[in-house]
Image (cartoon, rainbow, N blue to C red; front, side, top):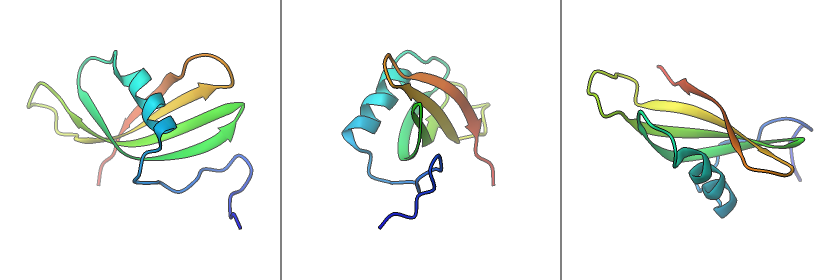
Length: 91
């Protein structure tokens, strides 16, 4: 039995599925400014699927203090996934 609310987010899953890995890699392979590693993901079914990835990020410059972000990606019903936002996670 599922406790999901239509349009609601799933809980974070710390085991990335092959689909989640593919979506993440297709968007992050061209990003510059940092190296992102997905640690967990959650999904929201809309007209397509929204993904929220909890990521560790390594910046080439040591002046950056943030090392965790939530990256949101939208996978439309047809076409390529695209980046919506990258938001730092702070204590």
